[in-house]
Amino acid sequence: MASIDTVLDKDGVRLTVEDAVATVTLTNPAKRNAQSPALWRALTEAGRALPGSVRVVVLRGEGKSFSAGLDRQAFTPEGFDGEPSFLDLARGSDAELDAVIAEYQEAFTWWRRSDLISIAAVQGHAIGAGFQLALACDLRVVAEDVQFAMRETSLGLVPDLTGTHPLVSLVGYARALEICATGRFVHAEEAERTGLANLVVADGEIDAAVRDLTAALLAAPRDAAIETKALLLGATRRTYDEQRTAERAAQARRLRDLAGLGD
Image (cartoon, rainbow, N blue to C red):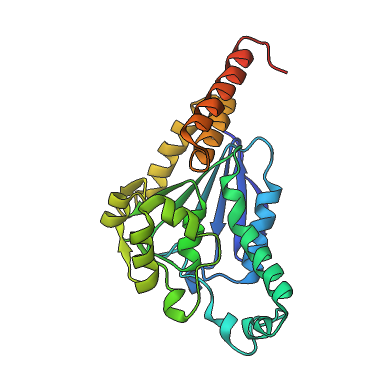
């Protein structure tokens, strides 16, 4: 049996690797895995630390909630120790504020790399930044008690951690607008029906379901999975004819590789 190596464990994030599977765990259940700039930097570091052997990344949260979103301490005058408060950030220049938000977003961008397939295992609350972190992944397996909500608009803000693009892609513009503008909860049945969740399982069965899905994903040859993911990711920005061309080019690469004629 392969050993599980701990690659990173800091600021509420733990990265472990077992063969081709990496697991990123949010490790602050006492605060329902609330998020902070330090946690976002740790998530970015986890993405950069992944060994090249990893094909599937599982994202999970310890305890009853996946992530209750941004730690409200960010909005207090004192903020987090060693960090500027969000109120201080608001006083900076447009360029400075843009650069800080871009740095925060890096924690949410690497999950869709074409050489990986990422799975969010979501139970309990996935609110705001927690919802956006689940949306950052390719696939979502959720427990029956899941509660998604995008509360930023209700707080006078907007979802800015890369969540708007996948949300609209999954549920459509009108439903995405209604979810964000009202801040209401989306429960398991609706999540599955609208495409937010790939699979809904009973509470307590999420780990087994993720293991089964991971095994199925690993059954395909890696290069074929990479090419397929790249095709699907690019489909929405290509025309029909451009997608046909991309399919032909990808298939030619696969056929040459299978014939031993690749580079």
